[in-house]
Length: 123
Image (cartoon, rainbow, N blue to C red; front, side):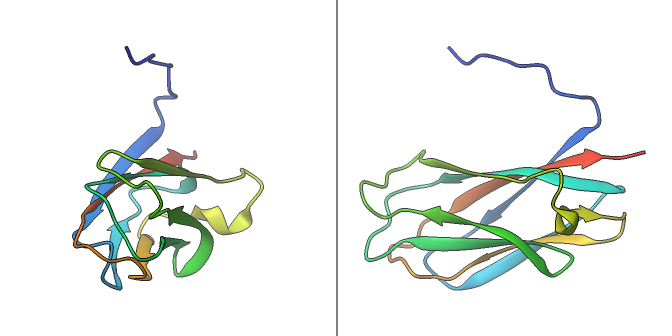
């Protein structure tokens, strides 16, 4: 049974999907308010093979980290996480900016990758 931990009311959950993690591509999400990116979670839609898929996460076109989706023993439902430090100045942005998630397309098999970005609103 999942355990629910209380989250601050000012956390916003932005979601999207890479339709095929094995094909080099990217997508963007708009930033809804002044704040910072605190965490990114991904969930794999099926097994990938050949090589790992590397997801580059950017705030306003500046990379803040990567998530490696491992091909070894990969399966539907595999979750990977990127936690960002609150001292990373590149994780902060104003309303009107964007988050970008780009896959290098290094793996094979056409598999979707769900993404949740946790955006902490600052006042």
